Amino acid sequence: MRKNFARLVSLLFVFVFALSACGTPATEAPPAETEAPATDAPATEAVTEAPAEPFVFGMLLVGPYNDGGWSQAHYDAGLYVEEKTGAKMIYLDKVNPADRPGTTPDQLAEELVAQGAKLVIFNSDDMKDASTTFAKANPDVYVIMASGDQVWPDGKAYQEIPNLMNIMGRMEYGKMIAGCAAALSSTTGKIGYLGPLINDETRRLTASAYLGAKYCHEKAGKTTDLEFKVTWIGFWFHIPGFTTDPVDVSKDFYTTGFDVVISGIDNSVNLPEAKKLTDEGTPSLAVAYDYINACDAAPEVCLGVPFFNWGPDYLAAIQSAADGSWESQFIWSGPDWSDLNNHDTSAIGFVKGDALSAENVAILDEFIAELAAGLDLWTGPINLQDGTPYLADGEVASDQQVWYLPQLLEGMQGLSASE
Figure 1 (cartoon, one colour):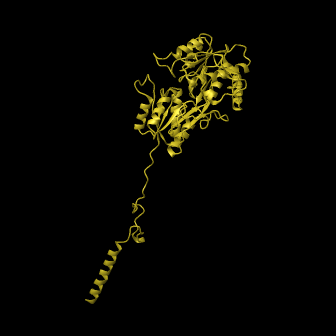
Figure 2 (cartoon, rainbow, N blue to C red):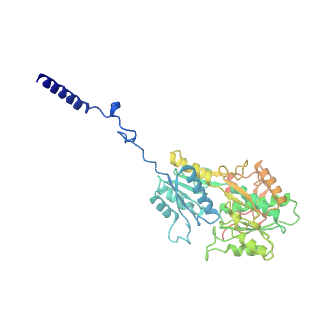
Figure 3 (cartoon, rainbow, N blue to C red):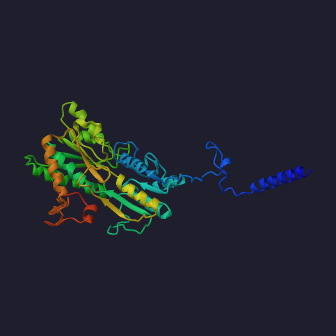
């Protein structure tokens, strides 16, 4: 019995020891002989953080997102920002009175905010007042006004709006290059300009094209007289029943001796018309506008396209909104002269067209090099269209004198203001 009793005590001791082992903290490693196989789930699972939600930015596009011009250049810049940052773009296009009657851009911006947008881009100069209204009513939403001068301290319309930023490219240079290409290629010396509506922006860009044409017409030693005429259609693109048809305007130019037409509207409808007339026996050339691939509409007659590259400035602005370093500022970005068409650095560029001869390519390249070296065609003497002196001999225009050009320039034909 003693042996049995001793054996019973020994078994009870082992049982008690086993019970006490069950209370070991989970963070302790189990004994080697009881370690779970590698295929078993771990005792505790690692906590994973949920991925951060992307920063959402919205765009209001005045025309179709795929218009092959102004609006598509902005849309593609949004895709560029998405690619570079992982941010998410939402947009509404055709934001204009004809396509969306009874609504205003600031009302449509509210729709983008309701969909999650923390920043809204207004992409057309005619949306300036609406962008101001929206920014003031929504101080927690960042606003980019493409063009505009609301927050330019040296501008005429300055207001302190902390959540608003103005962004514009110095397309004046692109238009000078366009004017040069037109003057070099014209055999008649007659250049037509397809203008949208009349305001500060369109006057200075049209005038810049004229200055480029005048300079290169003289540089090339042309014997013809230079004639530069602008016809305004009434809006950024054709709205049936509201604007003059730009196709008809282009045809009128080409059939009255103007052998080159420069587009200043959002879609380069002058290109197909130039090709049509060329095929019919009236040699016609065209300069496109806004979008890097705009010459694709009719490459055989295209001399080139000055284009906007909104990506770099939009990228910097949207990143600053996302990381909290945002500053209200006026940005008027020039070209990267070291690499004019660099997609990551240059706010504007110029793609030479197939219709530009090798001889004229060489002269145009010389002109571009002069601009890069500091040539400023906005240097006096320059008079306004009515003969009023604007810049004295040798006087270089200030940014304000260029931005707020009150009339077309002496030597240009066409209206300087709406009738």
